[in-house]
Image (cartoon, rainbow, N blue to C red; front, side, top):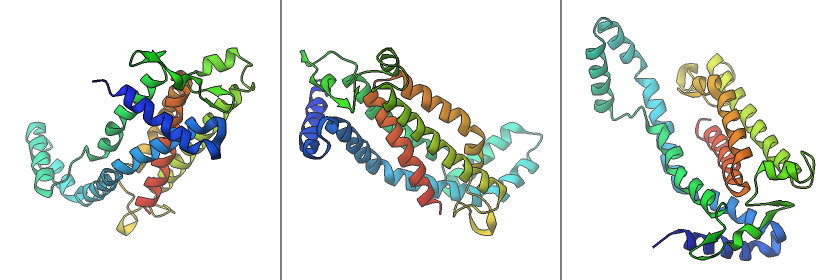
Length: 242
């Protein structure tokens, strides 16, 4: 049995509950609420990921010793690093889990707002809008119907602005952490930044570009999920690493 009709009804019911407050944009508000629920479900993994990154930072001196000891034997070094992480119960990949577990929710919304029919019936979700922009539409549709600053285009301008603001916020925090200055609470004892933030600073422009492209090419409902989740991630990480 397909899960899509069930989730389509769930979105419709949430939209009905929120309609007195958000009116024509109630389905969009339902998607934001759905995104928040998904993020709350994976929040324990996000906390575990930050703890894992701090534990990884504590292992740096031992990792440096192993690299020096096995500098001429890459195979032995790799084995020693795996053994060290297993001994300390630290996973270098723990930070990937929260993002990976969100993919099903993203693809679910993508399918729901890309299909003209769900469960053999017409897809009523496609009639919903965020202000003037259809939740099943894309940026190209908005450009064709009024241009960048048309009624639908301005919705995308707002989403792009949110993505840019979140990317700037994350980049500045990562750069401060890497510099070892005012980290805003993102440093470990002794002024050492939380591992991964420096790397985020280096790749942030590329990640934000990828997010902008995603928002532009997927249905607006899926784009709204991406923007909400991206903003949640930035705030959540700031709170967990303060």
